[in-house]
Amino acid sequence: MGGFGKFSAEVLKDGALSTKTEELISVALAVGLTCEYCILFHVLKAVEAGANRAEILEAAGVSMMMAGGPAAIYAAVVLLEVLDELGVK
Image (cartoon, rainbow, N blue to C red; front, side):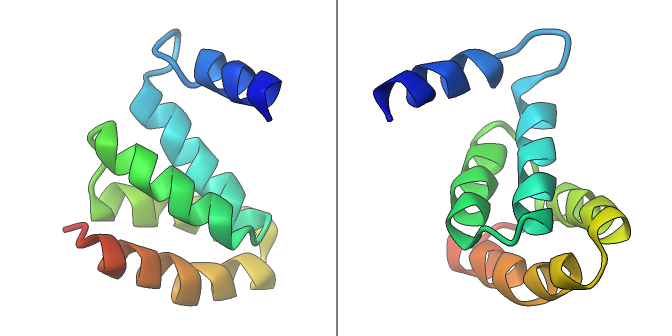
């Protein structure tokens, strides 16, 4: 994972898109791909980059609109649990 970690760090640094925006995209993709560990990781990183609960939930809403039912379940259950566990307001 060392190479992938370096790749991820390069992709997620500020550029044409801010790190916050990139992490919100990552949250949306994690929800759409139904990856619980990805949701936890990218919600934490999004919050560290300055995202709040409303922004994270809006990104998840875009994912639900694009991905349909499975994404809706992950947003309704897993994403809300992660936000609550991390105390994101």
